[in-house]
Length: 551
Image (cartoon, rainbow, N blue to C red):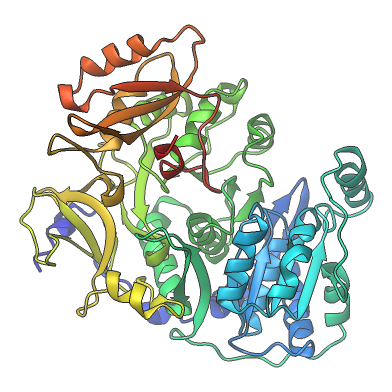
């Protein structure tokens, strides 16, 4: 393949990475803690955890897990928001050779039961706010150990006591629960301190994560991400972004959840590797609280999805944050809208750099040069990665032609856990992953994402890409956010329906339609506009179009 994108690489970015530099996440942690021992690693509500403390606490948890009978290859679910407990549980489990199953704390009982049963998880670490959900389904799973923690447990006295009291008694956010044999996470660490640790050798071929995703078919499946997949992606991101940062200690703010693959690799692992302080936001939907935290200290890196950037830009006080230290803003998870990117640059002075990837690619596959203005593309293939645009028969299409975006590289998953049928649908024999995303590559090697194949709207035989409709509608000053979906129509098969959260209470359906008509071909213009107070979103803030299609 003629890798045309290499000619567009920024100076200093290599065409290839050397995966041998990091062969496991356990090695990443060892290197980080040895090199940056006295630096702050994570911060939550003013409580700072150094790399040295992280090393000790993860050792203690790994020792407890081994003493509790958990062995290399056993699965452990982590059901935590962005708290200090998350990196301790994550790195401790990986040091013990376990496979981490990242679990959304907002899962319903059926969703949690499916994930625990499908993965065969033997243990779970859960925030007490959600322990009642575990209690409801524990008997239907293979769980042998349940560890429970409070939101304030690691904040230090008296803040820990105050936070837990407010959460439990003032806000009443902890429902009654009773799980026989459940262990306090803090107590497990205290016990582990007195226990020996047998160092477990894990290599690049060992599975590190079962990261659950709907993939291209909508069925929740565990993507098998090996240590080598994830550390390769860390090295790829470092090769692209690392040159923008000084090697002295820096600070990033993490508002998107660490259990999501985007923040897991881009925030948790990459910046542990770089030795930065990671400021954790426990609830990214409390936008005033996010702004308050961002005002406390200069930060050099911030990542998020389009809806988060848009919400922050519309939160009072955001414009008065000191952005002088901000070097990179990274957008992923969903398409970044040009109107949001332009406003972000105007307010912060920093370019919003768009990247793209999937759970199945650990996740990064393409990224834009961080010094280039927003151009609407999802960027260039990152080092050691290839992108091909293929038709439905798996044949390569010429530059400029639209087809399915396919990825090949060291970050591509091994397959789906216990689902060879689903794996065969997306993995081609020569190593290519069919992503289910539709787009094209231009002559410079930049990739342009048009939409998910399953989200295409077919109007009288013409393809309509929801992203295009949404991008136009979002430029109306009265629109806060929007989502375009297909609605059945007896004349044209399907028509465009647009769901809108209005910024202006006087905004009308006619206003939106006429605004879209000025920039879109007639068949792309929404035929129906529905106003909503909010749109359904995923755990990372991505708008869920599938939940709007049947409404």
